[in-house]
Length: 426
Image (cartoon, rainbow, N blue to C red; front, side, top):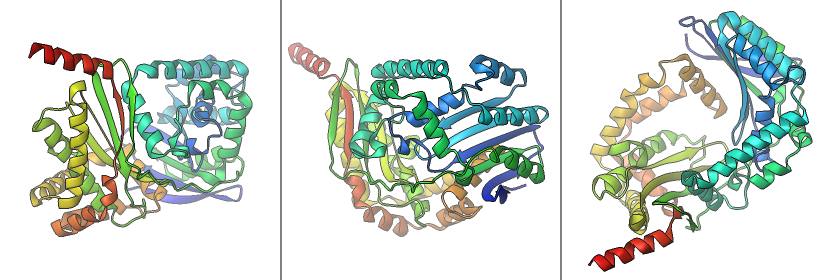
């Protein structure tokens, strides 16, 4: 059975429900996604993520440990999470235990663990995690790139927050964030497994009737910077971590997204077959791996990539990334590259739709991005007939991806020492 979308009326509000039945395994999963409620709306950096952690702390009556024990006794998975644009609550269990899971979810929504003890615990955990990230050079470089590409915007803030911002977040801040963003009028329900659509509708109505109607804010549109900035962060590292990005002027709703999928795969997403990997690792041995891809969301669209190299190779690797992207835009791709990309993207399609979770997630993605169900099949047909002239005209039209900005974590002292040693040995 394929996925379908049904509108469920909950106390006068129409709620979209993405549903697919599957009795192959006796499991049921449910996800409630709240649109326009993620970290982009944080009044303090990290607020959405911290609020999700608080909602995962069980009920005030049972406490964190007591509620976790109830879930464990029935092998139920229930937690909340927050992304840039959305806030989600996930529930899954065996069919025999899913009814109990729904009861516990309703219990959680009626009586969240809004206690100072729970707040102090999750803040301590988050601050501890952020402290550890001070020595995670991939994290530092990636964060630096976001801050460079999206300076002075909501996307430029660290989604996980900073030690200072997390310390300043109060229980009241989190209560307000949850109350103002989790409503039945901005919810999308994704539910599937060993149940009927009638049962899914009933569960959806039961759970969402506990939620209010909230004031939904318009999702912002944010453009990546064209400034070609370079941010260098010095650290005690033995490798250089190079993250790079550029604007990509193609909205999520553009009908040419299928061409971007092929172009991104060839530029940096196909492992050893990609331009970045071929030029940087295979031909020159400058890095163990090098990747790049186009990031697409309702908020923004941009090119993002990364590599790791020896300190003495930092400048050459950075120069080469710019050269590869420039040549990609100027000359386009070859017929051989196009044929290989088509073969993989079309041939691997069964692997991307073999499980229920893959199929239902894809149906949700199509709905979220304002596409009809089955849109990915139409894209594959278009990819199959895509010509070299069409994709090269597309690539050459997007010269903005050459406006690369870089975020580099390196060790200048170590690099200078290595250079001096080389000079002495000569």
